[in-house]
Amino acid sequence: MASISGQNTSNIDQVDGFFTTQGGSGISPQPVLTSGTQAAQVGESWFNPDVTQTFFRGASTTHKFVKMASIHNYGQFIGIKANGELWYWANSNIYGQAMFTTLNAWTRYGTDTDWEDVTGGQITWGFIKGGDFYFMGYGGWRMRGDGGTATESSPALISSSETWVAVSMSAQTTTIRNTAGEMFFAGYNTDYGTGQGTTSGQTATFTQEQNGLTGVTHHSAGYRRCVMVRGGQIYTTGNNIQRSAGPLIASNSAINGPILTYSGTDIVTVTCFGDDATLAITTGGQVRMAGEANQYSRPDNSTQDQKGTTGQANEAFSILTGAGSGWTFLIAGKTSSSTNWGAGIKNGEAYLGGTYSQVLQVVMGNSQSSTWQRIGTTSNFQCIEMSGGNVNEMHVAFSTS
Image (tube, rainbow, N blue to C red):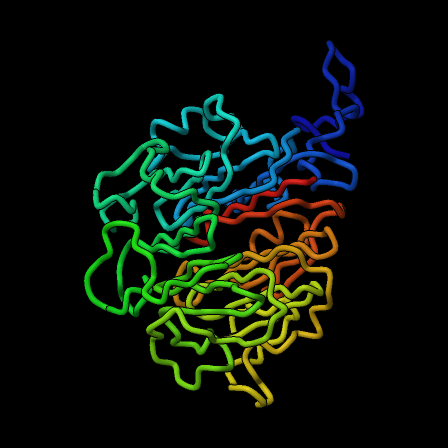
């Protein structure tokens, strides 16, 4: 039994309204989203030695998003609802001073209901609204696509020359697709990353890639590269240092594309794992992977690289049988040469993996590991997004359907 000034607490309990043995129930961390909920939740990895990391889960709120994106360098998320509303959660208003007027709470932006797509780069944002392209953030890298360099603090209308349907940004490139499945690029041309046949200078305005592809159905921008799905096959332009393009490319030289790099016809979506790897989901919900695996980019938790050409044992884009099937969503990012993260949805359940997700796995109630782990207790996840500039400021956002 404890004591106060030498007196056993049982002797002074309830004296003059002083209670020592009838404390409350204490405090508890916010629960992870559970099955049946319809909510969004944010977890942060800020470190406080007085409480466990699970206390850095925010409360779930009644918002359901069908699409979310984040900016790589800060804890900022933007989500789109099924009714076309645009919402945000941000812990700072850097590069969004006029947009992020409320911090640390999901907040609706404006009153429009025709927001269609959103993507985040390193310190840039891209939006599609009513078929038009909007830009926010740092403009000096020519990623705006209109030839300008101005920084925008809220979504600014940039291009209505095409009916745009999807946009993806990397650190220094904007890639955008129209209704015909044609691909346009703006930003740095390094490593043929903009598909213009050059590695020098910048492409200041949205310009169609040199080979005039049509019918592209999905695409993802990575560091100085872009991967595209057309007819279930994969086309690539740009950086290939880790042989992430696919089994049809025998060297690791930058690819002057876009050209065909995987000739199967079963790919639905692709995502760039930094410049290290490419992950693809098949029509059967399985995962194919090409490139470097030592940062646990593979959701089957193997560290075997997939860099071989067609027919080799470690052939690029061979199916990761250990990952199983049922995958509907995969995202990945890279913040330095040794810190990768990934997230996905498999059979409606959320997974986190990669070397940079370790702290967030603890925040979300799991053990700390680089391996991919299922998190939460729900089976109706709709989307996941991660962001952050360093291990002390990582964030993850979830939304259930």
